[in-house]
Length: 287
Length: 312
Ligand SMILES: Nc1ncnc2c1ncn2[C@@H]1O[C@H](COP(=O)(O)OP(=O)(O)O)[C@@H](O)[C@H]1O
Ligand SMILES: [Mg+2]
Image (tube, rainbow over all chains, first blue to last red; front, side, top):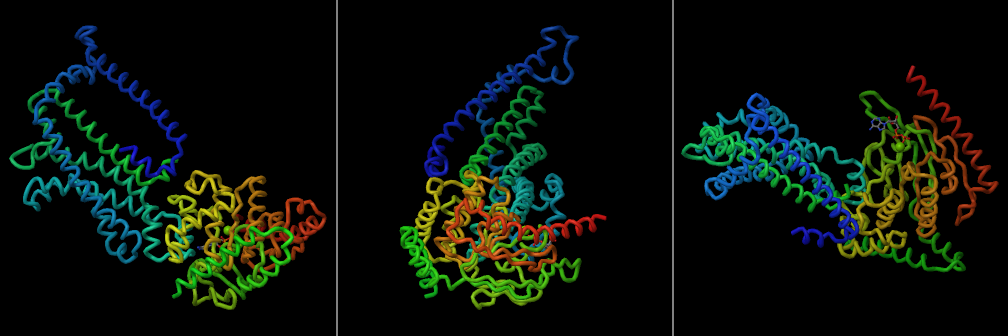
């Protein structure tokens, strides 16, 4: 995959730089791995402090959390179970639905707000009133409004990402340097040229910032919604419910397994966005 | 139909540039006559221009009844204290905003007036901006190809080819596929001038293009610009507050007053072209420097005192 991306932009990235970057990435990989290992060691030590030094030495907080080795054992226990993987699938599907809907509607909406004064005059005030409402405050209303739980979750998820994406796109498009617009205009660019060749690429960095933040919010909202809906008859499951279920079942290890799973899922999503950003904005590779 | 004509002229201009480039020095006389026959374009006439910002509010008078005549193919340098309204004047010529009174003509066609903020044929006059305005998301070649592509005078592929050729002629052949962020500011500025010239403009408008550059880069920029000018003989309207730069590059140096901008003094620079770096150490150059310096110094003091009054 990465090779395809590189060869199509081979002219932009000289060989030397790629090697240098590879080297540097390895360097940071090494540091990252070391940091994680040290973190796990400290955690293990912290949770087992009382086992080593006696009951009186139970550390506050961390002493009550299961050590990573126990978590790993619990994880190995759930790995073969299809239920665990279905939780992943359910959460991912919800996140993607909400996120993609927010991108598809939010980017054009933000751009329209940016380029058209009438549109902005009409739609920006209501937008700004709705924006500060936290996504979770929409839950009861959307449970009433939408026929199924699943739809309510999708809607609330969508809202979480939508506002962030719109505000980023709007900000990005409005702060494009007027020199670029003037330069393009003086070279005879039409309105459409200005939009497609200046405003759109000029906004791309903000679109990706909005997407990255929006993706984070979507995960938050999905997980919260899954816990609230409690995995009942419809719209249940997901990693949020997995954690909730583990809590009800009193399995501390499994709670941590669920949490780390979410961490990994979120990391995968933001990596994907970073990779896309890298691919679509070759000029930003320099920074 | 219109497209065809535009394509033809753009191409013809380019061919001519290429031919001129390849000529050897003994042909210089011939070259001069050829130029006069083709540079009857690009005469700028600035007549009684006044620009007041925000007429119903604070009323900043940036330009006050300013008149200048710039002959076709002339290098006209505008020197004045900062904040005096030079950019405002340039923006009016470029058609970026209207003016309150007066008119600006280019070859007897009205460019800008109180009722005419934007002229149709923008590509007649190309701007090189104060801080550079190459599109960061395009490579240098794509940047240069932008004009002919959006004007549809060339297909994208041909435009890119021509852009590469022109960049190579300006000594940027090995960075054509780099992004602006990857090249030095000097290279970027040169590419920006190429991006302007590919449109075969009548006037090149430069707003303190070499402002933040070190002396060494600047002198290379100057030689490059002079070389470009000797090739194309395009009319140049160049804002600066570097006096040496003004005299070294210009045919005329227009010193303007502190805000509101008015023409204070015009100094003709009769140093023959092509000029080289040594020109700057000649007696003639020194005398011209003194002359311009005196006029500018007066204005600088006025601007300084005005600033003090505002502060008080
Ligand atoms: N859009 C604007 N609105 C109001 N005042 C402006 C605007 N642009 C410039 N000015 C004012 O006009 C004066 C001249 O500005 P400018 O033409 O940029 O000066 P220069 O280029 O000579 O440094 C300055 O005092 C500046 O504050
Ligand atoms: Mg200025």
